[in-house]
Amino acid sequence: STAEALQQLTHCFAEAPTDLLQLLALHDGEGSGTSMVGLLPNYMELLSIERILEVHGWNVAANNEFMNDLASLGVADERAKPVFSYSRRIPFACCNGDVYWYVDLDPAPTGQIGQIVHDDAECMVLRVIAGSLQQLLQHYLDDIKQGKFSVEEDGQLISDADWPSATL
Image 1: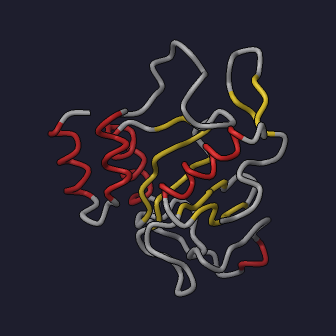
Image 2: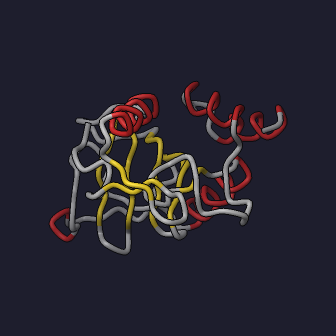
């Protein structure tokens, strides 16, 4: 990514974690349309800075509607505030335009700033999947080394379970 694009991101998210900025400086997203094979498992696509800012704009427009009844969620996590597409989270990966991974800048009291939230509003799943982006990527690398993924015909790494199946 360009220095200008990174500056736009840090202007929008002054608290953006260094590990996310470093990742985006090296590899500003996927989605060239030439291949479904990406860096992340299970067809999760690393978003470009342009796309991050676009999704953030949609989230701001959604007005942060909090869920009052956590029991209505298919999977709820007390570490994340009960809101889908929360504007205080940085979207960095998505699958099919409706499942997102976010860096959480405003967690619930039991959570931590920088935790990674899996947000799937269609299936009513909102859960913390790692304490940080670095922890998520290390877990991914460890699971690759341990053979927990298979390779699909198109070359995409797929896990047998909903990866990561256990929150970190």
